[in-house]
Length: 130
Image (cartoon, rainbow, N blue to C red):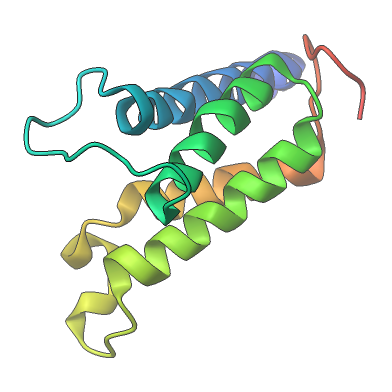
């Protein structure tokens, strides 16, 4: 499998782009109601969900484009850590702690993917070198 090593920079760029793009889409769902669930109420400007949507949308676009990638990914990672603890886990010390039970798999994955991106930077095909 050593032959795959020469593609690691390209695979990392694809991971950065796709995770940022998908994250931005989650923000667009919250902010603009694009393909959002019908029961989702409109957001109040300045609410916690509005700030989360703004971070998801603009942070995701910045990560996908590779612009100020380390800062954007660090903020997005922290946002997902808060999302997991507050909205999925809810600080319950029972089976609700586990992502498979509380449906927090995506929050945990985004948190650690963005932590990796914050450590690695933009990489190949990024708009800025950070």
